[in-house]
Length: 171
Image 1 (cartoon, rainbow, N blue to C red):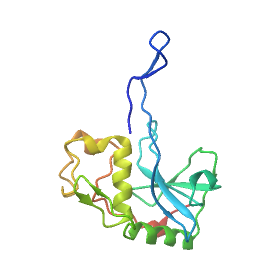
Image 2 (tube, one colour):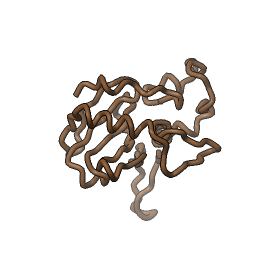
Image 3 (cartoon, rainbow, N blue to C red):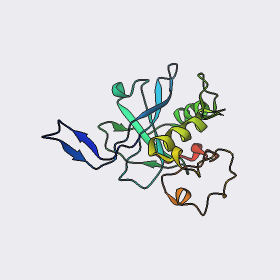
Image 4 (cartoon, rainbow, N blue to C red):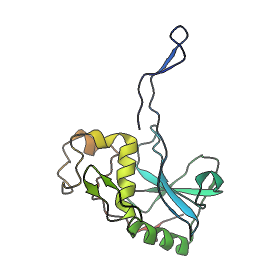
């Protein structure tokens, strides 16, 4: 979610902040496997990613990984947690979770998500402020948006983006 020209304080001593503030959105959590998937865009980065942490509550996690939406790649991050170097069984667990149907069905703007992967992409774009763009439409085939400014933004992820083969994730 973006906020511009946020005023802090009373009228006499107010401070106007011209910056973008992003919230962290929880996409899903696995109580059985004890991990959480969230999105938390960083306006200083030019890539699109989600985070996975090794506890169902992010504040209690010791390790996390930032994973690209477009290719099996991780990004280093400084969030006070150890970089999670997932093993093959943990990666398979994450893939299975992302491919699964959400337990709680979300109906947003008439859209129902079939997988947690789709929900993850929608939350990412929403946190970046892209869901308000007139070009943002789940029904558009890949490539239709190539001429739009939205598609050229490196943080935008088309809702029909295929999940990369995360079994090839290099950690």
